[in-house]
Length: 165
Image (cartoon, rainbow, N blue to C red; front, side, top):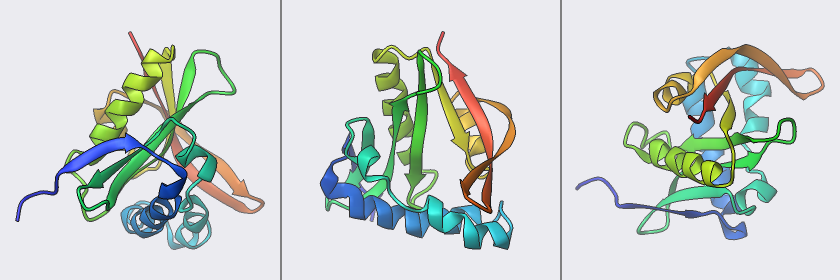
């Protein structure tokens, strides 16, 4: 049995439940080696929820098999903080299918579309786990920061950036 054939398309409202399930399944398994149990219990359940407006907003992609199983997802939005900047949003690959080019394919769509839309850079808040992936995709680390998810619940991330030349 070979690798599944994967197609990439824009996310829709009908994908929200499947993306939510993918995040809930994959983030805890992928992040546990890089985050302490206290973060896994408090922060990861918050992160592991699909944002309906993002998934159906027109700049979010899903990678799916011929049978309709979503194995990867991710997107971008225009930055509200800086003109000419786009933010990478909620990129995930099924933990059972990592290192098979799914995340790379989603990220290439994000890069291409953000550039076509006029962005001159991509900003990203990467998990510690994903930092090597983003570096391989041309991002540079700007250092670790902590973001507040809710009062008393913080999550350490790596601020990363890719400038288009």
